[in-house]
Picture 1 (cartoon, protein in one colour):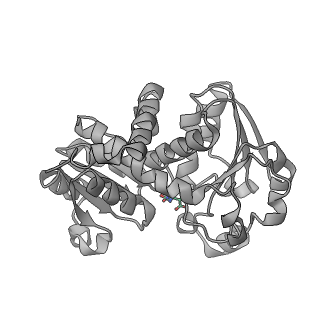
Picture 2: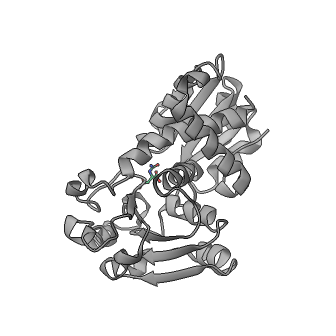
Picture 3: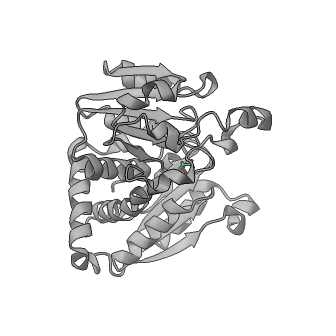
Length: 303
Ligand code: NCD
């Protein structure tokens, strides 16, 4: 039984294969409408979500399957004191695949030990978010035509941003990637990624606070939201929340071929004026999230 807890659970060949299937789904959707007929997905969201949960559910319906679950742990037996393991084990008895999001780092891994079916990590605290990474990789491949030889800027909350951690790990296995880490001192990339992924693999990276100074060098600008829910105090959040605001003026200094990605939700960090700029890829990214999740669900269900 195969789970997806960490993006490194998939080899580069498997990721490239998922991207090919996702592209085939875009081109030939009719081929896939019955692939998961009679299969059930449970979506267990112990933390808020819009895109991740809806894209998984939309993916399962698109494959002819059905969905059950909860989007608010307050309506589950968690409020009675049930453990995550028991809740997930129960859901796995009623379903063929479980998608779960939890505020605690490592919760999906722990849950996988008691689950009777495959588990997908849909975000665990400030740790990992492997299916957003699949979405990001599919988007980069579609927009740029390649996943190699790119200068990728990560901007904003690199400390708590789980999508950043997973995407950096994934990109570390492709050749010719230069990482530009743009954040305030307080929100720098954690040591376990900087040392454990970038340094360990001898990858090229720079750290800066200055988005304007580097925007002209980037092929991809990956913007992120400051993760309010992971802060210990509101004062720090308020001080840091508007560290970066991407405006049309700033975009004038970027290459005409650069793409702006954002896992969303955005708060203030991208001005809405940019939404119509052809370089703004974040709503195309939302769409891509459905197709790559369809490919993933089929793979883990072995269909
Ligand atoms: C992200 C997440 O939940 O980590 N959202 C998403 O899944 N697309 C990013 C965020 O919440 O800022």
